[in-house]
Image 1 (spheres, rainbow, N blue to C red):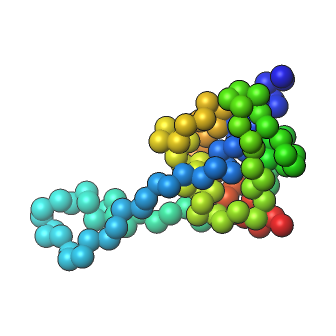
Image 2 (image 1 turned 90 degrees about the vertical axis):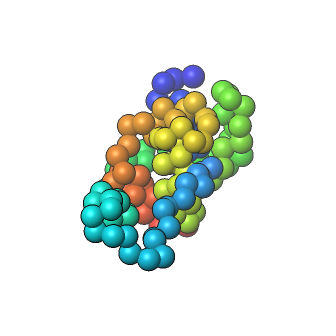
Amino acid sequence: MRPLTIAALALTTLLAVGAHAQQPAPAATPAAPAATPAAPAAAAAPAAKGDAARGRELVFTCKGCHGVTGYKNAYPNYHVPRIAGQNPTYLINALTGYKQGTRKHPTMQAQAQSFSEQDIADIAAYISSLK
């Protein structure tokens, strides 16, 4: 199997499976200003907004696996789901999970390592816009 095909498989699997990463819940009551100065900044960090046009440029390898109906990859043997039109939050969670290692699939983990948070948001925006 050619390396590009393997890379495409990994990325598409990553996008299809979806991670269940949780965003931190906002505090019920405001923290004391002097208690933890870094905590409010971390909680206030906005999620990246996806750019579907840029995402289209990033998903060229995804179609190699996720665009083929009934495709199963060779290692590990896994049915590769179609991801077009998937919920963007699901896609973001999946890619983030592979990147952080909380979702396990060697090919998808390898693909996700190369993506920034913005790349993941862009990919999710594009894939979720497909029918």
